[in-house]
Length: 222
Length: 222
DNA sequence: GACGTTTTAGACAACAGTGTCTAGTTTGAC
DNA sequence: GTCAAACTAGACACTGTTGTCTAAAACGTC
Image (cartoon, rainbow over all chains, first blue to last red; front, side, top):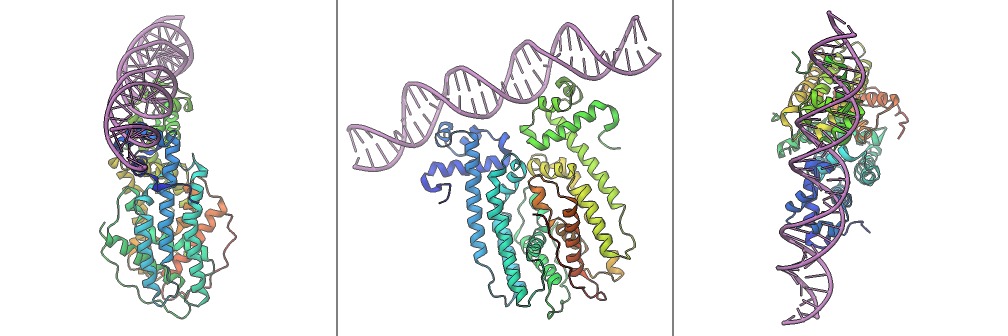
């Protein structure tokens, strides 16, 4: 049912990967077919053989990356804390997995950059991503928070708002690193997740659990 | 002492504004000098008369926008709640002013987009912005939170972390709108700021102020 | 009104990129 | 080995862009 049939040929994969790399680095206008062909170790004609024109290749690349990113997101979401005995640890572990494998990996970088620079030119192209990516994780998190709230673990009125805030907090320490193309270290992923979860739980702590005094902040490598 | 002398000539301003518009819309590679010339109502030769080549024009535009954005940020920061009788209202008003006039205005959109797409290619160009923009507001907010914490209004260990989280929370409801080039409405600015400040204060509430029950969430236009 | 400066319109060469075509080569299945 | 399909290398026309150049026109100052 997926719109892209990735497994068809080794050349296709090579082209898609190289094109993703070059489109991400140079943008749509700046990327040249020759550059992609060289990076893919493929003749230019082969690219035109698989994809009618540059725009066709671009949309194919975007859809391919979106499919992969959504699959990864789905697998991350499936490892969700269904029952929450250790809420803080569970949320932290989830935040680390999410930031590492979805938000800050190669595909996440690609999508953030391309949505930002070409999103207005191709509104329909990224709309499916917006629904299946940020939309899906928002509703999934919202559902989790609704469960936790009904059980009395957390005290939340607007579940979707809480989900957005959770994601924003998780991203707070990471965005300045990723903005310039860098990749956070494992320690940065961990401290970002821990800081976010601590603040989130303090804001939405249930009536029973009086907020514990905050542990001293880690030394974060700037 | 500023590196750009904007006031010199009306044509210069016209060129810089048009170039900012086109560079933001098309990216560096996609923007053509002819397009900029038409948009600026200026002959192409005039552009080459003022700026040696395309790259010179680009850096001039970026520096011009950065200067303007930093000036605006400075004026926003100077309207800071020095004494905080009504902390929630003061922080909310500040968040609204900041998001409206710095984060989501034309210059903010330009910088976000260009830093994202061309930041890796021109590392030195945006470094001054990173220091004078996000860096400055971070330290200013951190200083405010330090004051509030010493006065016992808030209970904060890591002031810089709190500043980053405050900004992240303020942006939580806005980033999905701005990501695709849209501009939030006044109601969206207001509800985003209010949601952020409420959660922030609940997370960092001082020992005295018991968190008040959360007001019902607004109907947010999706 | 004269004069120096700035701007304009257009032509121009050089170049890079797209997309096509062709002829020759490799590959893989049988 | 044969044959068809896929791939390659290169040439090719065409377009769009950059940056230069020139002669004419507009502008502003005195």
